[in-house]
Amino acid sequence: MIQGIVDLAVVTAPINQFPQIIEACAQKGAAGAVIISGGGRETGEQGARIERQIKAAAGQSGMRIIGPNCIGIAHPPSNLNASHMPGTPAQGRIAFLSESGGKIIGSARIIFTASGTEGEFAIMLADSWQGKGIGAALLKSCLAFSKRYGLKRVFGVVLRENRQMLLLADKLGFKKASSPASNEIELIIDIEKLDLYTL
Ligand SMILES: CC(C)(COP(=O)(O)OP(=O)(O)OC[C@H]1O[C@@H](n2cnc3c(N)ncnc32)[C@H](O)[C@@H]1OP(=O)(O)O)[C@@H](O)C(=O)NCCC(=O)NCCS
Image (cartoon, rainbow, N blue to C red; front, side):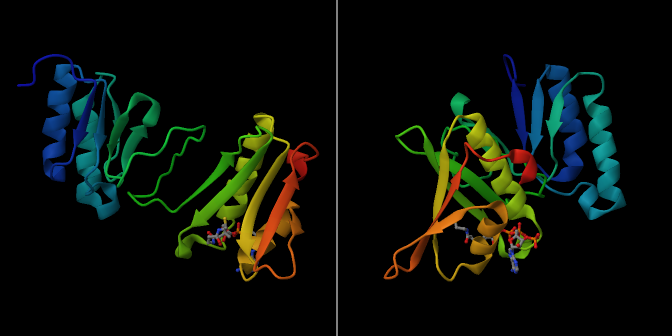
């Protein structure tokens, strides 16, 4: 029996043990549980039944449950990493939420420069998720976020042969700059003038 208060339970047991574990957590007054292990409704009717049992086990306790079959949660400002990510993300101004069965399919971020008026974008999607409009959606969100935080310009450096990124940049209205000898192209967009509704 665990002594003291339980804020958060992290569960990695086999799925058929979840209902009784969650029931014990609820009785203990745990505020939440993260169920990392898989085996829920993504596996079929039996898994779906266990998910219903988990919900019933939490009952009226008010306990929040994330999972099953998830990468977990991390909140760097609180030094919390209840996930199976290889490391803890750095503190910053980006929140990342995905429903992906334990796989991160991509990420996009704006790295603020020391000037306070410019930010560099970095974006990457897993191969099988490219060409579905996700890159455009993520980069648009990054631009909206940059505008909200008062940046004047956003830039990124890409290789000349990066056709997909150059097409995406054209679509969003980035300008290109490069020297003939260089294999890289700088993409720049003026955030101040950007009308987010026309993106
Ligand atoms: C570059 C990258 C982020 C683009 O994301 P994506 O989700 O594949 O792109 P989208 O599906 O949102 O495409 C956006 C637009 O770009 C163009 N485009 C992208 N891929 C294209 C392709 N293979 N063929 C033609 N047009 C393409 C289209 O204009 C498309 O607009 P549309 O859907 O209206 O036709 C992604 O391919 C990636 O992660 N590449 C590897 C990492 C990288 O190069 N990052 C950039 C350097 S920081």
